[in-house]
Length: 363
Image (cartoon, rainbow, N blue to C red; front, side, top):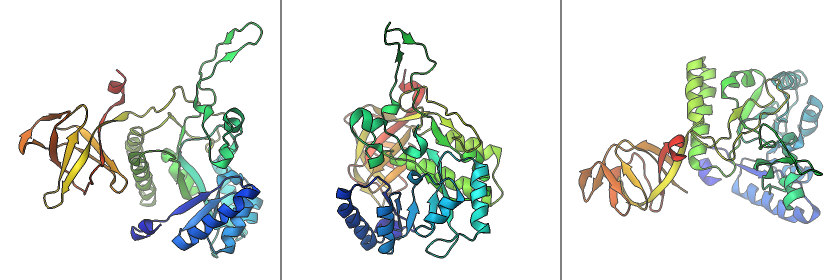
């Protein structure tokens, strides 16, 4: 939380699981720590967590797990929360109606301002209504509603007739795995409908995913506010978003579509993939140069690379210069220790990846 504050960012703690009696003491401890750490807000759905957080003066955001789908539900939660994440199954007309009602009825949260609408903008979607799924618990005794989904929906399945054993021919074996949500091409409609907070799903994603997706959506929001939201920019954002993890994209239900779109593949359909090739061994700030060791593969001039680490985050650049034994070279290979200019500080043991075209990686 302190790192976020020092960099002008908000921090949020997710407590949006179903709570049992034996969870309450731990929940209270976590909220207490959040208060002491000055976390910006907690995201919760269980009334036990919501009420306790408010009793400690903590700002609360209502999770999509609460399935808020109408203005009366917003009014109910407004006594606890300044931000409400609406159900993912709503369309923009329904969202606009709720937004207009918030203004008309002057629905305000504990901080005194009008309740703000938050909605999912990008990332993985669950096959179940706003994530309330029983499949993982049923098959693997690991509950999605307790934050422990093992995603059996992402696996391939066949349909078999019991008596004969005949397999039913279906057009897609991933019949329960939705494509990822992408809204950047109609972000203007979401803003016009009253959405004021955009949620990007990125559980278990790498830092390059977070950086790429957040950068593009931030650009899109500012482009719209500056009247520069254009088809050309949308095309550029689309291409950039396709380079990081995705299962294919669709619009969700926001534009009125009633049937889901299902992924045709297991795993990512990103147009680029990262290959681990080595790590950072030193950094020389006066020179702006990093020293690396190649642990596998090779690296050449003009290759695109990614450097990641717990503090470094994600740094992407093209290789403009390589030196081995202080001499300029065009290529370095496994086992060699080399150096190259890097525009930002990197740290020992940061990982070095080479970004390659996904089609080439599969050849």
